[in-house]
Length: 527
Ligand SMILES: Cc1cc2nc3c(=O)[nH]c(=O)nc-3n(C[C@H](O)[C@H](O)[C@H](O)COP(=O)(O)OP(=O)(O)OC[C@H]3O[C@@H](n4cnc5c(N)ncnc54)[C@H](O)[C@@H]3O)c2cc1C
Image 1 (tube, rainbow, N blue to C red):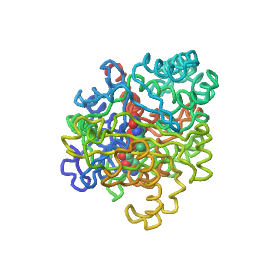
Image 2: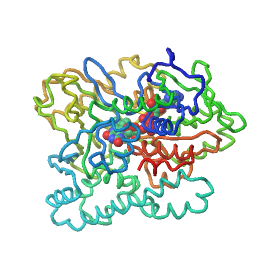
Image 3: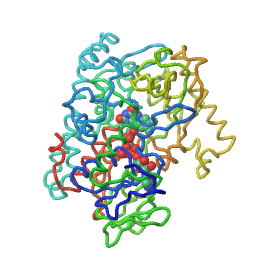
Image 4: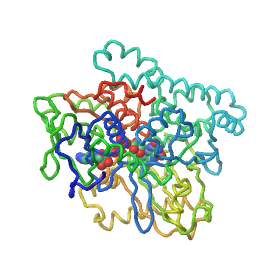
């Protein structure tokens, strides 16, 4: 049962495993281990569980933070659907977003991504008839790249001996695609700059533009949504609500407002955690879902970090960019306001994605390189029962952490007037984009609130407000330390950093971590 650390009335004497963080990876690991009979304690810093899957409420509205659409939920046979069904006992229900899941807007031109591979290709060919061959070849390459992924990720969970013997065999086909940037691959198929811009428009789903991102990351996102997008019925908070009873059934607990200060390590073996208030919990296994940067920089004792040269590892990876989200509350139902389910990806008319980002980073008054509009209340069929007569819109753009860095260390809601003014300026720019795309909502906005990279730092503990943990560059996928096992005995990692960003990536990380801990092929069992 989810409860506050301050009350902790139901706390057990002893747990088999402690998980730091209740993000998707932490929850998935907890549920799988619970199904293996383990008593698991999940410790969450925030006052509400779920990591980026949490929702927050203000002024009679509710907003989802890190879920706008999930792919592969349409078919019961898909791996991801099976995983979700396993960790929730099939209790989590999904609503399909309809035929068009993403709309790419470049200047005044619109390009729809239609669900179903054949439809996707057909629609793109209507926009670019002379590029039929390139579009077909592109889709083939997406499938080929994704096909190599399963063995690569599974190799992260196999024992070190097996990895030494067979790791190369598992990983080499994957490297063929992961070593290339998205731009290298796509520009080898076509030199039509508009088509390249459209095909790579979903880069916002992993945070890195085509000339910097690994093609496998791009391919996995594109493939993920080929069958369309889905939204959890009742909102993202349903995930933790449906996972919680599974954890509880084995005697486990999720504690919120429970910040871990340090992992206790004796003779290179993790034996427990020390909380911020000094209380200690001892256990057999400890898993960090807090992100590798936070884990190595903040949660492990410095002597251990030095002993294993863990900071050297961190130098080989980069943090992903930070973001700002504008959460808008409107008067009127999604139907009354004619709010779509489709996500809008809005880009400047001129220049490719990388150039737009570079120009913006040099001068933040330049057009946003990307504005993403999502409409959670329209996607959730349960919304109007919970919030009659209301709607919400989420708008996201990239913002460097440095923009707000001078307020780091100040308290949430008390950062002062200059900070608030800066937020308001960004909010107005984003609202302008909303009115441009959906003029009918002008005059219907009841309230809005902008989150900054400091909000992400405050609520989800990413030190520089990273949106997606680590950057998805080609070199990231070469880093063998991004896996569940660490050099410290009984201490493991899970979550987006050991697979990829995305709820699906974090969930799969939970499978890998459970496999590494139990030594059992839990994936086979789930399938
Ligand atoms: C704006 C945004 C939109 C997104 N949209 C989508 C989308 O539409 N579809 C999709 O698939 N993915 C989306 N994502 C990505 C997805 O939400 C994440 O990749 C995924 O949820 C990360 O899960 P995780 O397991 O790595 O943990 P996280 O969600 O990162 O959670 C880590 C948890 O650890 C806790 N923690 C940290 N330090 C401590 C400590 N010391 N003690 C206790 N607890 C601690 C944090 O508070 C947090 O709850 C989005 C992300 C963002 C930010």
